[in-house]
Amino acid sequence: MKPAIHYAFKAKLIRRIKENGEFDFIDVFQEFFDDEPIKAREKAFIYYQNYIDVLLESKGLSYKSDRQAREATESFYDPKTSHLEVFGENQIKFPDFLGNGIGVFLIIDEVVDEPISNENMVMIHGIGWLYEGFNSTSPDGLARNLEREHYYYQHFDFSYGNYKTSISVYDPSDLSEVDDLDQPKVFNILRTPFDWSGYDQETWMDELFDESDEIEQAQPSESIEDVISFGETNTVEFKPSLLYNFKTNTAGIGVKGIIAKSICGFLNSKGGILFIGVNDYGNIQGLSYDYSLAGEKDKRDFFRLEFDDLLKQFLPSFIMGNINGVFVEIDGVEIFLITVYPSKSKPIFMNGKDGKEFWVRWTASTRQYKDVEDIVNYCLEHWGKDDIEG
Image (spheres, rainbow, N blue to C red):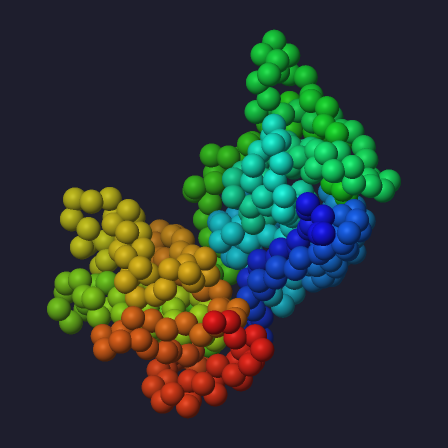
């Protein structure tokens, strides 16, 4: 009989190798099981530490403490950096707004009647925005998640090893003692590398939100322009519009179909970044042509709805978690970045005019495979016979 809980490591990162302009999409989910959950926990944290060591090494650093590591890798999770960040000497990286991060998760296989929550997967340590909601990576959020973990160890009488401890953290969401809100709350937890010193004061919230007004106004660094100036590669493509047809000066379903083919090609290959509002020559022309079709509607809302409609119309719903889009401003001109993580285990077919279509990204173009034998051979070579699902 398996224990009521186990652990997982999750990493989602995008890095660009400057030498060839290609992007490397890292999407890892590794689970750890043991009859003694504390041992599975230890394995997950070792796995996590190995990734942190690699990130620090890329910056010419070595691990000294969790707090030092967080400060050194801030570009991986700082919500104020809504742009590409320089990452080491040879790579640059998209930060948290695309859902990136690294973390250790508690997975609850047997949910009991607990007073804290009923979710079955919570982050107990990490950086970034892998877990929905701000509190997942804030000190008070981590403290509550760890308290929940402790609850399960206590409920099922699991061994704590030498990890059981107590911490004091100022928790702004704790409204149980209205007259005592400025006092820290004591949490019973299992120890992690996180440094809790200084978080028992309300002032840590002031430091966190010191520059909060700049989040929406944060400007992209020159790194995005560097990517564009490098030109199209097998993981980078430019498109001048999402739905504006430059021949008819109207909206065209065919234009959306072209975007869908590019996304499908990235899904079936190494993944990729699609820049909307950049023409084939790398000129940043922006989204004004698409915006001109919005009429009286909010331009961004209109664009976002059209993008969502494109995905629903052309691609299967189960793959939507691999696709993300974000508005970015460069020198006063807005463009739209579509990030596509590759499909891990199965080929993706899009809904074409005459039925299902299979597209693959080549060096700097997207090509359709029509011959069944070609499709089968590509799938076997790309995913492997044992890896292909359903």
